[in-house]
Length: 595
Image (cartoon, rainbow, N blue to C red; front, side, top):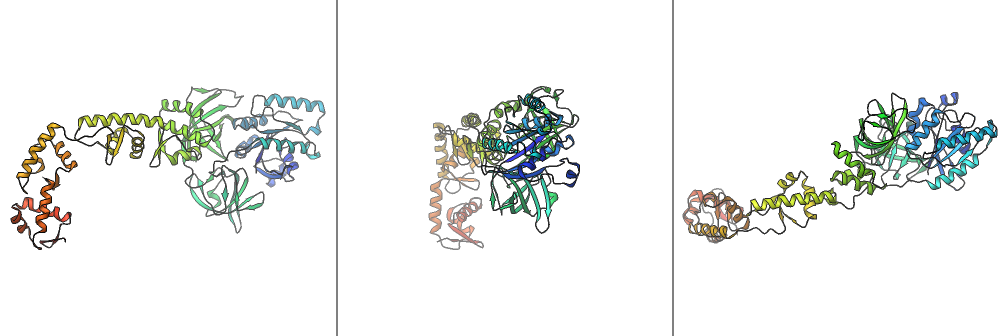
Protein backbone atom coordinates (compact mmCIF):
# COMPACT_ATOMS: atom_id res chain seq x y z
CA UNK A 1 0.00 0.00 0.00
CA UNK A 2 2.16 2.85 -1.27
CA UNK A 3 1.87 6.47 -0.17
CA UNK A 4 1.51 9.61 -2.31
CA UNK A 5 2.41 12.95 -0.78
CA UNK A 6 1.27 16.34 -2.00
CA UNK A 7 3.54 19.35 -2.28
CA UNK A 8 3.13 22.90 -3.50
CA UNK A 9 2.39 26.48 -2.56
CA UNK A 10 -0.47 27.43 -0.25
CA UNK A 11 -3.93 27.58 -1.87
CA UNK A 12 -2.83 26.00 -5.14
CA UNK A 13 -5.44 23.26 -4.86
CA UNK A 14 -3.65 20.32 -3.22
CA UNK A 15 -6.51 19.31 -0.91
CA UNK A 16 -9.11 19.92 -3.62
CA UNK A 17 -7.25 17.61 -5.99
CA UNK A 18 -6.83 14.91 -3.30
CA UNK A 19 -10.58 15.08 -2.59
CA UNK A 20 -11.32 14.74 -6.31
CA UNK A 21 -8.98 11.74 -6.56
CA UNK A 22 -10.23 9.92 -3.46
CA UNK A 23 -13.70 11.24 -2.64
CA UNK A 24 -12.42 12.12 0.85
CA UNK A 25 -11.68 15.56 2.29
CA UNK A 26 -8.17 15.39 3.79
CA UNK A 27 -8.68 18.51 5.92
CA UNK A 28 -9.49 17.28 9.44
CA UNK A 29 -9.77 20.41 11.56
CA UNK A 30 -12.67 22.87 11.81
CA UNK A 31 -10.23 25.74 11.46
CA UNK A 32 -8.92 24.28 8.19
CA UNK A 33 -12.43 24.08 6.77
CA UNK A 34 -13.31 27.55 8.05
CA UNK A 35 -10.20 29.17 6.57
CA UNK A 36 -9.96 26.97 3.48
CA UNK A 37 -6.32 26.40 4.39
CA UNK A 38 -4.50 23.18 5.23
CA UNK A 39 -2.74 23.63 8.57
CA UNK A 40 -1.70 20.12 9.51
CA UNK A 41 -1.24 16.81 7.76
CA UNK A 42 -4.32 15.39 6.10
CA UNK A 43 -4.94 11.81 5.04
CA UNK A 44 -7.06 10.07 2.41
CA UNK A 45 -6.93 6.95 0.27
CA UNK A 46 -8.34 5.35 -2.83
CA UNK A 47 -7.99 2.33 -5.10
CA UNK A 48 -6.52 2.93 -8.54
CA UNK A 49 -7.73 1.25 -11.72
CA UNK A 50 -5.12 -1.53 -11.48
CA UNK A 51 -6.32 -2.41 -7.98
CA UNK A 52 -3.51 -0.66 -6.15
CA UNK A 53 -4.72 0.76 -2.85
CA UNK A 54 -2.87 4.00 -2.27
CA UNK A 55 -2.74 6.42 0.64
CA UNK A 56 -2.42 10.18 0.38
CA UNK A 57 -0.65 12.50 2.79
CA UNK A 58 -1.77 16.06 2.15
CA UNK A 59 0.69 18.62 3.51
CA UNK A 60 0.18 22.31 4.27
CA UNK A 61 1.57 24.78 1.76
CA UNK A 62 1.82 27.91 3.90
CA UNK A 63 5.36 28.85 5.00
CA UNK A 64 4.17 29.08 8.62
CA UNK A 65 3.43 25.36 8.55
CA UNK A 66 6.56 24.09 6.80
CA UNK A 67 7.37 22.06 9.94
CA UNK A 68 4.11 20.16 9.47
CA UNK A 69 4.85 19.70 5.79
CA UNK A 70 8.24 18.17 6.59
CA UNK A 71 6.62 15.82 9.11
CA UNK A 72 4.62 14.17 6.36
CA UNK A 73 6.82 14.11 3.28
CA UNK A 74 9.69 11.83 4.31
CA UNK A 75 7.85 8.50 4.01
CA UNK A 76 6.16 9.05 0.63
CA UNK A 77 6.75 6.87 -2.42
CA UNK A 78 5.49 9.32 -5.06
CA UNK A 79 5.09 13.10 -5.00
CA UNK A 80 1.99 14.83 -6.34
CA UNK A 81 3.43 18.28 -6.99
CA UNK A 82 0.82 20.99 -7.48
CA UNK A 83 1.22 24.39 -9.18
CA UNK A 84 -1.75 26.66 -9.95
CA UNK A 85 -1.86 27.83 -13.55
CA UNK A 86 -3.31 31.20 -12.61
CA UNK A 87 -0.53 32.03 -10.12
CA UNK A 88 2.48 30.10 -11.42
CA UNK A 89 5.67 29.35 -9.50
CA UNK A 90 5.60 30.71 -5.93
CA UNK A 91 7.95 30.75 -2.90
CA UNK A 92 6.57 27.59 -1.34
CA UNK A 93 6.63 25.87 -4.72
CA UNK A 94 10.40 26.36 -4.63
CA UNK A 95 10.80 25.31 -0.97
CA UNK A 96 8.65 22.20 -1.37
CA UNK A 97 10.53 21.21 -4.51
CA UNK A 98 13.82 21.72 -2.65
CA UNK A 99 12.64 19.36 0.09
CA UNK A 100 11.61 16.67 -2.40
CA UNK A 101 14.87 17.05 -4.26
CA UNK A 102 16.95 16.81 -1.07
CA UNK A 103 15.01 13.72 0.01
CA UNK A 104 15.67 12.11 -3.35
CA UNK A 105 12.00 11.71 -4.29
CA UNK A 106 12.36 10.93 -7.98
CA UNK A 107 8.91 9.47 -8.68
CA UNK A 108 6.25 12.11 -9.13
CA UNK A 109 3.39 13.60 -11.05
CA UNK A 110 3.01 17.34 -11.66
CA UNK A 111 -0.54 18.68 -11.52
CA UNK A 112 -1.05 22.07 -13.14
CA UNK A 113 -4.24 23.04 -11.33
CA UNK A 114 -7.00 25.58 -12.05
CA UNK A 115 -6.45 25.30 -15.81
CA UNK A 116 -10.19 25.81 -16.17
CA UNK A 117 -9.70 29.35 -14.79
CA UNK A 118 -7.17 30.48 -17.45
CA UNK A 119 -6.99 30.49 -21.22
CA UNK A 120 -4.82 28.01 -23.09
CA UNK A 121 -2.02 30.50 -23.77
CA UNK A 122 -1.60 31.22 -20.06
CA UNK A 123 -1.72 27.51 -19.28
CA UNK A 124 1.03 26.95 -21.87
CA UNK A 125 3.17 29.65 -20.25
CA UNK A 126 2.56 28.19 -16.79
CA UNK A 127 3.55 24.71 -17.98
CA UNK A 128 6.72 26.07 -19.59
CA UNK A 129 7.63 27.87 -16.36
CA UNK A 130 7.10 24.74 -14.28
CA UNK A 131 9.26 22.69 -16.64
CA UNK A 132 12.03 25.28 -16.36
CA UNK A 133 11.83 25.27 -12.58
CA UNK A 134 11.96 21.46 -12.39
CA UNK A 135 15.09 21.26 -14.54
CA UNK A 136 18.03 19.78 -12.68
CA UNK A 137 15.93 18.41 -9.81
CA UNK A 138 14.78 14.91 -8.93
CA UNK A 139 11.37 15.65 -10.55
CA UNK A 140 12.78 16.76 -13.90
CA UNK A 141 10.92 14.84 -16.58
CA UNK A 142 7.97 13.91 -14.36
CA UNK A 143 4.64 13.76 -16.26
CA UNK A 144 2.58 16.96 -16.11
CA UNK A 145 -1.22 16.88 -16.18
CA UNK A 146 -3.44 19.95 -16.61
CA UNK A 147 -6.34 19.80 -14.19
CA UNK A 148 -9.46 21.59 -13.04
CA UNK A 149 -10.42 19.38 -10.11
CA UNK A 150 -13.86 20.84 -9.24
CA UNK A 151 -14.97 20.25 -12.85
CA UNK A 152 -13.29 16.84 -13.00
CA UNK A 153 -10.81 18.01 -15.63
CA UNK A 154 -7.64 15.87 -15.69
CA UNK A 155 -8.54 13.82 -12.59
CA UNK A 156 -8.59 10.51 -14.46
CA UNK A 157 -5.30 11.41 -16.14
CA UNK A 158 -3.69 12.17 -12.77
CA UNK A 159 -4.87 8.81 -11.43
CA UNK A 160 -3.35 7.06 -14.45
CA UNK A 161 -0.07 8.98 -14.12
CA UNK A 162 0.11 8.14 -10.40
CA UNK A 163 -0.49 4.48 -11.23
CA UNK A 164 2.50 4.51 -13.62
CA UNK A 165 4.71 6.39 -11.15
CA UNK A 166 3.85 4.00 -8.31
CA UNK A 167 4.67 1.00 -10.51
CA UNK A 168 8.17 2.43 -11.04
CA UNK A 169 8.73 3.40 -7.40
CA UNK A 170 9.30 1.06 -4.50
CA UNK A 171 11.11 0.50 -1.25
CA UNK A 172 13.26 -2.46 -0.25
CA UNK A 173 12.13 -3.86 3.12
CA UNK A 174 14.87 -4.77 5.60
CA UNK A 175 12.75 -6.76 8.04
CA UNK A 176 13.09 -4.20 10.85
CA UNK A 177 9.75 -2.39 11.20
CA UNK A 178 9.88 1.31 11.89
CA UNK A 179 7.21 3.99 12.09
CA UNK A 180 7.63 7.69 12.74
CA UNK A 181 4.54 8.88 14.59
CA UNK A 182 2.70 11.78 12.94
CA UNK A 183 -0.49 11.63 15.05
CA UNK A 184 -1.41 10.29 18.47
CA UNK A 185 -4.81 10.42 20.12
CA UNK A 186 -7.01 8.57 22.58
CA UNK A 187 -10.16 6.60 21.79
CA UNK A 188 -12.55 5.91 24.63
CA UNK A 189 -12.47 2.26 25.63
CA UNK A 190 -9.46 1.53 23.41
CA UNK A 191 -6.71 3.80 24.68
CA UNK A 192 -3.79 5.29 22.78
CA UNK A 193 -3.74 5.22 18.98
CA UNK A 194 -0.80 6.35 16.85
CA UNK A 195 -0.58 6.77 13.10
CA UNK A 196 2.24 6.92 10.61
CA UNK A 197 3.68 5.26 7.54
CA UNK A 198 5.09 1.82 8.31
CA UNK A 199 8.57 1.35 6.88
CA UNK A 200 11.03 -1.50 6.35
CA UNK A 201 9.19 -4.39 8.01
CA UNK A 202 5.80 -5.79 9.11
CA UNK A 203 3.83 -5.30 12.33
CA UNK A 204 1.27 -7.74 13.75
CA UNK A 205 -1.27 -7.79 16.54
CA UNK A 206 0.45 -8.88 19.74
CA UNK A 207 3.87 -7.51 18.78
CA UNK A 208 5.86 -5.64 21.40
CA UNK A 209 7.20 -2.32 20.16
CA UNK A 210 9.39 0.29 21.80
CA UNK A 211 8.94 4.05 21.58
CA UNK A 212 12.33 5.56 20.77
CA UNK A 213 14.30 7.29 22.12
CA UNK A 214 12.90 6.46 25.59
CA UNK A 215 12.51 2.74 24.68
CA UNK A 216 9.18 2.64 26.51
CA UNK A 217 7.49 -0.62 25.56
CA UNK A 218 3.93 -1.24 24.47
CA UNK A 219 1.91 -4.09 23.01
CA UNK A 220 0.00 -3.78 19.72
CA UNK A 221 -3.65 -4.44 20.50
CA UNK A 222 -4.98 -3.81 16.99
CA UNK A 223 -3.82 -2.71 13.54
CA UNK A 224 -5.81 -0.68 11.04
CA UNK A 225 -5.05 0.72 7.62
CA UNK A 226 -7.57 2.77 5.63
CA UNK A 227 -10.28 1.87 8.17
CA UNK A 228 -9.70 -1.87 7.69
CA UNK A 229 -8.49 -4.14 10.50
CA UNK A 230 -5.48 -6.39 9.91
CA UNK A 231 -3.81 -9.12 11.95
CA UNK A 232 -0.54 -8.32 10.21
CA UNK A 233 0.47 -5.59 7.79
CA UNK A 234 3.57 -5.05 5.69
CA UNK A 235 5.73 -1.97 5.15
CA UNK A 236 4.70 0.93 2.95
CA UNK A 237 1.19 1.33 4.38
CA UNK A 238 -0.46 4.13 6.28
CA UNK A 239 -1.13 2.47 9.63
CA UNK A 240 -3.02 3.16 12.85
CA UNK A 241 -1.82 1.15 15.86
CA UNK A 242 -3.76 0.78 19.09
CA UNK A 243 -1.09 0.46 21.79
CA UNK A 244 -1.51 -1.02 25.25
CA UNK A 245 0.62 0.34 28.08
CA UNK A 246 1.18 3.88 26.85
CA UNK A 247 -0.39 7.26 27.41
CA UNK A 248 -0.90 9.57 24.47
CA UNK A 249 1.75 11.98 25.78
CA UNK A 250 4.39 9.26 25.67
CA UNK A 251 4.20 9.02 21.86
CA UNK A 252 4.21 12.56 20.45
CA UNK A 253 4.77 13.45 16.82
CA UNK A 254 8.41 12.78 16.03
CA UNK A 255 8.68 9.67 18.20
CA UNK A 256 9.71 6.47 16.45
CA UNK A 257 8.25 2.99 16.96
CA UNK A 258 10.42 -0.06 16.42
CA UNK A 259 11.13 -3.44 17.91
CA UNK A 260 13.14 -3.52 21.15
CA UNK A 261 16.78 -4.30 20.45
CA UNK A 262 16.60 -3.39 16.76
CA UNK A 263 17.77 0.19 17.22
CA UNK A 264 20.03 2.38 19.30
CA UNK A 265 20.11 6.12 19.79
CA UNK A 266 22.67 8.81 19.06
CA UNK A 267 23.20 12.51 19.75
CA UNK A 268 26.09 12.87 17.27
CA UNK A 269 26.22 11.60 13.71
CA UNK A 270 28.02 12.04 10.42
CA UNK A 271 26.01 13.20 7.40
CA UNK A 272 26.53 13.96 3.74
CA UNK A 273 24.82 17.31 3.03
CA UNK A 274 23.70 19.18 -0.05
CA UNK A 275 22.43 22.74 -0.02
CA UNK A 276 19.26 23.88 -1.76
CA UNK A 277 19.94 25.10 -5.26
CA UNK A 278 19.09 28.76 -4.69
CA UNK A 279 20.66 29.39 -1.31
CA UNK A 280 21.28 33.13 -1.02
CA UNK A 281 24.63 32.69 0.79
CA UNK A 282 26.92 29.71 1.51
CA UNK A 283 25.99 27.65 4.54
CA UNK A 284 28.19 28.10 7.61
CA UNK A 285 28.23 26.01 10.75
CA UNK A 286 27.38 28.98 12.92
CA UNK A 287 23.77 29.64 13.76
CA UNK A 288 20.78 27.63 14.90
CA UNK A 289 19.30 24.79 12.90
CA UNK A 290 16.41 22.37 13.08
CA UNK A 291 16.97 18.84 11.92
CA UNK A 292 13.90 17.28 10.30
CA UNK A 293 13.92 13.49 10.17
CA UNK A 294 10.94 11.17 10.05
CA UNK A 295 8.02 13.14 11.41
CA UNK A 296 9.96 15.22 13.94
CA UNK A 297 11.97 18.41 14.20
CA UNK A 298 14.94 18.65 16.56
CA UNK A 299 17.42 21.42 17.45
CA UNK A 300 20.82 20.66 15.98
CA UNK A 301 24.33 22.07 15.67
CA UNK A 302 26.55 21.36 12.69
CA UNK A 303 30.32 21.20 12.15
CA UNK A 304 31.44 21.24 8.53
CA UNK A 305 34.32 18.90 7.66
CA UNK A 306 35.30 19.87 4.13
CA UNK A 307 35.77 23.62 4.35
CA UNK A 308 34.54 26.65 6.30
CA UNK A 309 31.37 26.86 4.21
CA UNK A 310 29.03 24.49 2.41
CA UNK A 311 28.39 25.96 -1.02
CA UNK A 312 26.92 22.84 -2.63
CA UNK A 313 27.91 19.48 -1.10
CA UNK A 314 30.00 18.36 1.82
CA UNK A 315 30.15 16.27 4.96
CA UNK A 316 29.31 17.50 8.44
CA UNK A 317 28.95 16.24 11.99
CA UNK A 318 25.57 17.05 13.53
CA UNK A 319 25.06 17.21 17.29
CA UNK A 320 21.61 16.99 18.87
CA UNK A 321 20.18 18.05 22.21
CA UNK A 322 18.19 14.82 22.52
CA UNK A 323 18.88 11.28 21.33
CA UNK A 324 17.39 9.88 18.13
CA UNK A 325 17.25 6.37 16.69
CA UNK A 326 19.00 6.85 13.33
CA UNK A 327 20.57 4.52 10.80
CA UNK A 328 22.89 4.88 7.85
CA UNK A 329 20.97 6.11 4.81
CA UNK A 330 18.28 8.01 6.71
CA UNK A 331 17.22 11.13 4.80
CA UNK A 332 17.43 14.41 6.68
CA UNK A 333 16.45 18.04 6.09
CA UNK A 334 18.09 21.08 7.71
CA UNK A 335 16.17 24.27 8.27
CA UNK A 336 18.07 27.34 9.44
CA UNK A 337 16.21 29.24 12.14
CA UNK A 338 17.66 32.63 11.19
CA UNK A 339 16.76 32.35 7.51
CA UNK A 340 13.43 30.64 8.31
CA UNK A 341 14.04 28.37 5.33
CA UNK A 342 15.18 24.93 4.33
CA UNK A 343 18.89 25.28 3.55
CA UNK A 344 20.20 21.74 3.11
CA UNK A 345 19.48 18.07 3.31
CA UNK A 346 21.16 14.76 2.78
CA UNK A 347 21.75 11.35 4.28
CA UNK A 348 23.11 9.91 7.49
CA UNK A 349 26.52 8.32 6.84
CA UNK A 350 27.29 7.03 10.32
CA UNK A 351 25.14 7.31 13.46
CA UNK A 352 28.22 6.72 15.66
CA UNK A 353 31.18 8.24 13.81
CA UNK A 354 34.86 8.48 14.85
CA UNK A 355 35.91 11.36 17.07
CA UNK A 356 39.16 12.61 15.51
CA UNK A 357 39.06 14.95 12.53
CA UNK A 358 41.40 12.85 10.38
CA UNK A 359 39.44 9.69 11.13
CA UNK A 360 36.19 11.46 10.26
CA UNK A 361 37.48 12.69 6.92
CA UNK A 362 38.82 9.22 6.08
CA UNK A 363 35.45 7.70 6.98
CA UNK A 364 33.51 10.00 4.63
CA UNK A 365 34.93 8.50 1.45
CA UNK A 366 34.34 4.91 2.56
CA UNK A 367 30.77 5.58 3.66
CA UNK A 368 29.88 7.62 0.58
CA UNK A 369 30.96 4.72 -1.63
CA UNK A 370 28.81 2.16 0.22
CA UNK A 371 25.97 0.52 -1.67
CA UNK A 372 22.33 1.01 -0.66
CA UNK A 373 21.63 -2.37 0.95
CA UNK A 374 21.91 -2.82 4.74
CA UNK A 375 24.63 -5.44 4.25
CA UNK A 376 26.72 -3.07 2.11
CA UNK A 377 26.27 -0.30 4.66
CA UNK A 378 27.19 -2.67 7.49
CA UNK A 379 30.40 -3.60 5.67
CA UNK A 380 31.29 0.09 5.22
CA UNK A 381 30.60 0.89 8.87
CA UNK A 382 32.83 -2.00 9.96
CA UNK A 383 35.60 -0.88 7.62
CA UNK A 384 35.51 2.57 9.24
CA UNK A 385 35.30 1.28 12.82
CA UNK A 386 37.68 -1.65 12.48
CA UNK A 387 35.68 -3.69 14.97
CA UNK A 388 32.35 -3.37 16.74
CA UNK A 389 29.57 -5.43 18.28
CA UNK A 390 27.41 -7.15 15.67
CA UNK A 391 24.31 -5.76 17.36
CA UNK A 392 25.62 -2.19 17.04
CA UNK A 393 26.49 -2.68 13.36
CA UNK A 394 23.05 -4.15 12.68
CA UNK A 395 21.27 -1.29 14.47
CA UNK A 396 23.28 1.43 12.71
CA UNK A 397 22.91 -0.13 9.24
CA UNK A 398 19.23 -1.07 9.54
CA UNK A 399 19.76 -4.80 9.94
CA UNK A 400 22.92 -5.35 7.90
CA UNK A 401 25.40 -8.18 8.38
CA UNK A 402 29.10 -7.62 7.48
CA UNK A 403 29.53 -11.08 5.97
CA UNK A 404 33.25 -10.75 5.21
CA UNK A 405 34.11 -9.93 8.81
CA UNK A 406 36.00 -12.04 11.33
CA UNK A 407 33.43 -12.77 14.06
CA UNK A 408 33.74 -14.11 17.61
CA UNK A 409 31.84 -13.51 20.82
CA UNK A 410 29.30 -11.23 19.15
CA UNK A 411 32.05 -8.92 17.88
CA UNK A 412 32.90 -8.36 14.21
CA UNK A 413 36.39 -7.38 13.05
CA UNK A 414 37.01 -6.03 9.57
CA UNK A 415 39.45 -8.14 7.54
CA UNK A 416 41.98 -5.28 7.20
CA UNK A 417 41.80 -4.55 10.91
CA UNK A 418 42.12 -8.25 11.72
CA UNK A 419 45.24 -8.41 9.55
CA UNK A 420 46.73 -5.36 11.28
CA UNK A 421 45.95 -6.73 14.72
CA UNK A 422 47.31 -10.13 13.68
CA UNK A 423 50.62 -8.57 12.66
CA UNK A 424 50.83 -6.61 15.92
CA UNK A 425 49.90 -9.68 17.97
CA UNK A 426 52.46 -11.85 16.16
CA UNK A 427 55.21 -9.31 16.88
CA UNK A 428 54.21 -9.06 20.54
CA UNK A 429 54.07 -12.85 20.96
CA UNK A 430 57.44 -13.35 19.26
CA UNK A 431 59.04 -10.72 21.51
CA UNK A 432 57.53 -12.42 24.54
CA UNK A 433 58.91 -15.80 23.48
CA UNK A 434 62.39 -14.28 23.04
CA UNK A 435 62.28 -12.73 26.50
CA UNK A 436 60.60 -15.70 28.17
CA UNK A 437 61.66 -18.87 26.35
CA UNK A 438 60.53 -21.11 29.19
CA UNK A 439 56.96 -19.78 29.24
CA UNK A 440 54.28 -21.29 26.97
CA UNK A 441 53.06 -17.92 25.70
CA UNK A 442 51.91 -14.42 26.59
CA UNK A 443 48.87 -14.25 28.91
CA UNK A 444 45.77 -13.48 26.86
CA UNK A 445 44.56 -10.50 28.98
CA UNK A 446 48.03 -8.96 28.77
CA UNK A 447 48.10 -9.26 24.97
CA UNK A 448 44.56 -7.85 24.64
CA UNK A 449 45.57 -4.86 26.76
CA UNK A 450 48.73 -4.36 24.70
CA UNK A 451 46.68 -4.29 21.49
CA UNK A 452 43.94 -2.12 23.02
CA UNK A 453 41.13 -4.53 22.13
CA UNK A 454 38.51 -6.52 23.99
CA UNK A 455 39.31 -10.20 24.73
CA UNK A 456 36.58 -11.27 22.28
CA UNK A 457 38.26 -9.28 19.49
CA UNK A 458 41.62 -10.87 20.29
CA UNK A 459 39.98 -14.30 20.25
CA UNK A 460 38.65 -13.62 16.74
CA UNK A 461 42.01 -12.33 15.52
CA UNK A 462 43.94 -15.33 16.87
CA UNK A 463 41.44 -17.79 15.40
CA UNK A 464 41.81 -16.20 11.96
CA UNK A 465 45.64 -15.98 11.99
CA UNK A 466 47.55 -19.22 11.28
CA UNK A 467 50.69 -17.74 12.87
CA UNK A 468 49.04 -17.66 16.30
CA UNK A 469 47.57 -20.32 18.57
CA UNK A 470 45.17 -20.06 21.47
CA UNK A 471 46.74 -22.13 24.26
CA UNK A 472 44.12 -21.70 26.96
CA UNK A 473 45.14 -18.77 29.17
CA UNK A 474 47.98 -17.77 26.84
CA UNK A 475 48.63 -17.04 23.17
CA UNK A 476 51.71 -18.52 21.49
CA UNK A 477 53.23 -18.68 18.05
CA UNK A 478 52.18 -21.81 16.19
CA UNK A 479 55.85 -22.70 15.62
CA UNK A 480 56.83 -22.25 19.26
CA UNK A 481 57.34 -25.44 21.23
CA UNK A 482 59.16 -24.06 24.26
CA UNK A 483 60.70 -26.52 26.67
CA UNK A 484 64.10 -26.65 28.36
CA UNK A 485 67.33 -26.11 26.46
CA UNK A 486 70.52 -28.03 27.24
CA UNK A 487 71.63 -25.69 30.03
CA UNK A 488 68.18 -25.80 31.66
CA UNK A 489 68.11 -29.60 31.40
CA UNK A 490 71.50 -29.83 33.11
CA UNK A 491 70.33 -27.51 35.91
CA UNK A 492 67.19 -29.58 36.30
CA UNK A 493 69.15 -32.83 36.69
CA UNK A 494 71.08 -31.32 39.59
CA UNK A 495 67.87 -30.10 41.22
CA UNK A 496 66.15 -33.41 40.65
CA UNK A 497 68.97 -35.31 42.37
CA UNK A 498 68.91 -32.91 45.34
CA UNK A 499 65.13 -33.16 45.74
CA UNK A 500 65.20 -36.95 45.52
CA UNK A 501 68.00 -37.11 48.10
CA UNK A 502 66.01 -34.95 50.52
CA UNK A 503 63.31 -37.59 50.89
CA UNK A 504 60.07 -35.94 52.02
CA UNK A 505 61.87 -32.99 53.65
CA UNK A 506 62.49 -31.22 50.33
CA UNK A 507 63.72 -27.60 50.13
CA UNK A 508 61.40 -24.69 49.39
CA UNK A 509 61.05 -23.87 45.69
CA UNK A 510 62.82 -20.56 46.29
CA UNK A 511 65.76 -22.46 47.75
CA UNK A 512 66.38 -24.73 44.78
CA UNK A 513 69.13 -22.44 43.48
CA UNK A 514 67.78 -22.10 39.92
CA UNK A 515 66.06 -19.35 37.88
CA UNK A 516 62.43 -18.84 39.01
CA UNK A 517 61.42 -19.03 35.33
CA UNK A 518 62.87 -22.56 35.21
CA UNK A 519 60.92 -23.46 38.34
CA UNK A 520 57.69 -22.24 36.70
CA UNK A 521 58.51 -24.24 33.57
CA UNK A 522 59.14 -27.40 35.64
CA UNK A 523 55.81 -26.94 37.41
CA UNK A 524 53.96 -26.37 34.10
CA UNK A 525 55.51 -29.50 32.62
CA UNK A 526 54.68 -31.55 35.70
CA UNK A 527 58.30 -32.37 36.50
CA UNK A 528 57.75 -30.70 39.86
CA UNK A 529 54.52 -30.64 41.82
CA UNK A 530 53.74 -27.69 44.06
CA UNK A 531 52.80 -28.59 47.63
CA UNK A 532 52.39 -25.27 49.38
CA UNK A 533 55.84 -23.60 49.13
CA UNK A 534 57.68 -26.84 48.40
CA UNK A 535 58.31 -28.72 45.16
CA UNK A 536 58.12 -32.51 45.05
CA UNK A 537 58.91 -34.99 42.34
CA UNK A 538 55.81 -36.81 41.05
CA UNK A 539 57.34 -40.16 42.01
CA UNK A 540 57.88 -38.91 45.57
CA UNK A 541 54.19 -38.12 45.89
CA UNK A 542 53.23 -41.47 44.35
CA UNK A 543 55.34 -43.19 47.02
CA UNK A 544 53.76 -41.01 49.68
CA UNK A 545 50.26 -42.01 48.64
CA UNK A 546 51.17 -45.71 48.57
CA UNK A 547 52.63 -45.63 52.08
CA UNK A 548 49.75 -43.61 53.52
CA UNK A 549 47.18 -46.06 52.16
CA UNK A 550 49.00 -48.78 54.15
CA UNK A 551 48.70 -46.87 57.45
CA UNK A 552 46.03 -47.50 60.05
CA UNK A 553 42.99 -45.19 60.12
CA UNK A 554 42.89 -42.41 62.66
CA UNK A 555 46.49 -41.26 62.58
CA UNK A 556 47.57 -37.86 63.92
CA UNK A 557 50.02 -35.27 62.64
CA UNK A 558 52.55 -36.60 65.09
CA UNK A 559 52.04 -40.15 63.78
CA UNK A 560 52.59 -38.87 60.24
CA UNK A 561 55.75 -36.97 61.22
CA UNK A 562 57.18 -40.07 62.86
CA UNK A 563 56.27 -42.35 59.95
CA UNK A 564 57.87 -40.12 57.30
CA UNK A 565 60.67 -38.52 59.27
CA UNK A 566 59.61 -34.91 58.68
CA UNK A 567 58.93 -31.90 60.85
CA UNK A 568 55.60 -30.10 61.15
CA UNK A 569 56.85 -27.66 58.48
CA UNK A 570 56.54 -30.44 55.88
CA UNK A 571 53.92 -32.63 57.53
CA UNK A 572 51.06 -30.12 57.53
CA UNK A 573 51.36 -29.14 53.82
CA UNK A 574 51.67 -32.80 52.82
CA UNK A 575 48.58 -33.78 54.83
CA UNK A 576 46.58 -30.92 53.31
CA UNK A 577 47.69 -32.08 49.85
CA UNK A 578 46.54 -35.63 50.70
CA UNK A 579 43.17 -34.27 51.86
CA UNK A 580 42.76 -32.23 48.64
CA UNK A 581 43.70 -35.30 46.58
CA UNK A 582 41.01 -37.31 48.44
CA UNK A 583 43.56 -39.80 49.73
CA UNK A 584 42.73 -38.85 53.33
CA UNK A 585 39.92 -37.11 55.11
CA UNK A 586 40.25 -35.08 58.28
CA UNK A 587 38.18 -36.21 61.24
CA UNK A 588 38.82 -33.77 64.06
CA UNK A 589 42.54 -33.93 64.82
CA UNK A 590 42.93 -37.28 63.07
CA UNK A 591 43.06 -38.45 59.44
CA UNK A 592 41.17 -41.39 58.03
CA UNK A 593 42.01 -43.01 54.73
CA UNK A 594 39.47 -42.63 51.91
CA UNK A 595 38.80 -46.17 50.68
